[in-house]
Length: 149
Image (cartoon, rainbow, N blue to C red; front, side, top):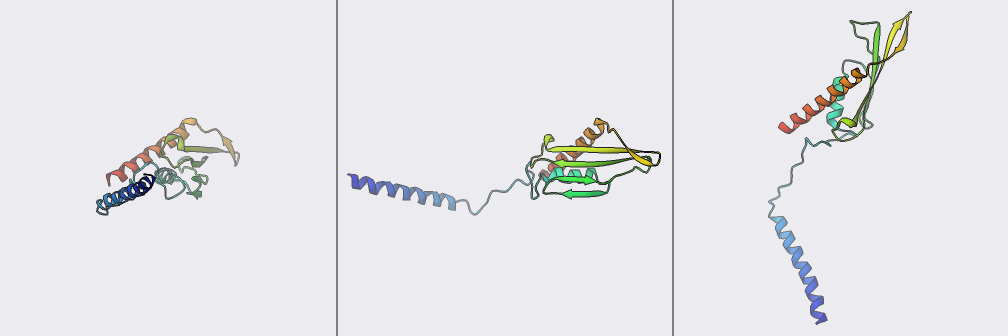
């Protein structure tokens, strides 16, 4: 009786393996399609929607640094031609591969011209918040476009 049990168990395992392979062959070679619009799309080190949206949002200013693996975008000083006595510099940091509001951090510096030199001045919190909102809105729009295609 022990001999028959030891033969039945491997036979059952082999039968299960054959059945699994047979069912696998029924799939007709179709592979599941990847969701290209997933919240974690990243062929770079960070979420690609946030990255593209951030680059677009700060495109009015010259770039000093853009590191897609580290998720850091730093602009050079930008002076609006309508207000040449004031300039701003921005740093956008993408902290995660997920498309989430807390995966984005924006910092800004502002200087004003006084007596021929630039002096640091405060940046309104609403300004930074508005830039974050613009980036997040654009990132969501890019994701919706990817889903539609």
